[in-house]
Image 1 (cartoon, protein in one colour):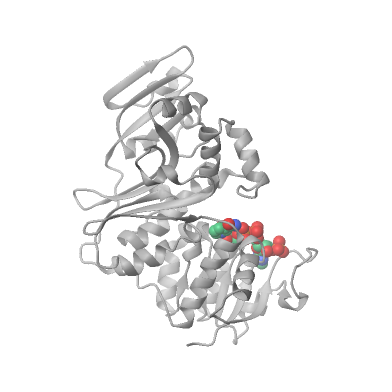
Image 2: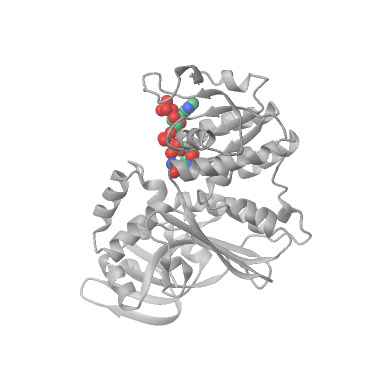
Length: 392
Ligand SMILES: NC(=O)c1ccc[n+]([C@@H]2O[C@H](COP(=O)([O-])OP(=O)(O)OC[C@H]3O[C@@H](n4cnc5c(N)ncnc54)[C@H](OP(=O)(O)O)[C@@H]3O)[C@@H](O)[C@H]2O)c1
């Protein structure tokens, strides 16, 4: 077993969860040499000697062989992680935004410097989904990976649908409970789920997706009548990123709310929980559920990565090495429900094979098929703020 001397960046929600996990681990010991944080005036719950405010105290310490990056600033995280890798230090991170935006550069860097970069906590918190895709499903072709990757939106959707409280009240509750940030944009607009989609696509299909290529739609325009429609038809509404292999072998991926039937495992994933459905060509459907965020669950996932480093673990990115590596496409038709309070905006969404087209006094909806690329294009206009879209 390799002796690990770790330097940690960040001692917030996840950093403190990691500290708790290390102190309460039964079988694993490691030395925390330094913790670099930002705010000099903040009171700390552990010995002040751990802390520094100068990143060089970790990055230029040759005894530190593992950098654990747990800060809330994706740009600075990228600087820290790149520098650490260039200094031949292994890295563990929970930063999905940094990974989602810089996956290609980070992969190239870790390969060039021959270090390990692990990030189990970055996608679906304590659900061990990355290592499951990377190791267990390394040789099996997957057909689809989808799920509930964001706890904040799932909490809001659960409360609005199951408990009849308004979107804004549910968001306020989520913020009060610490599930949502003061600025919830990344969660409710689907960015957070999109970064996780990029991370999981790499390990499930060997494809590096680009954020600008992905159809992404959140839950901010959910209307009470959308909820009524869902309930009347026996659905729940969940934000369900989907990555799937098409008949032509290409990969389609998008982040959209979805009507979920009671038989679907995801319908039982409520509140801040996450769930992942993995459909293998040979093994069939597998379902994983757990806490997608929070101090201790996320800290436990980070600890698991650090522990894996002690026996030399690295992602091999096996799916990237397959012969017929698939390419990404938005050229696929999906069935959607689209609604609006303004008929003019709804008319701008052109659906094929329309199954329903309902007009009430101040609420309009239709159901039909649309090409993902076409939907993405229209959602890049003002129409986005005036409609709600749900995949069926
Ligand atoms: N919270 C979760 O449940 C969760 C789950 C999965 C992944 N993540 C990811 O984990 C990361 C950390 O999230 P968090 O919730 O722990 O954030 P947080 O509670 O806001 O804590 C952020 C920490 O980063 C430190 N920091 C910020 N900028 C810094 C800099 N330039 N140099 C050094 N330290 C800096 C802060 O220092 P001060 O203490 O001095 O302010 C603080 O300790 C994020 O990437 C997040 O997306 C979080």
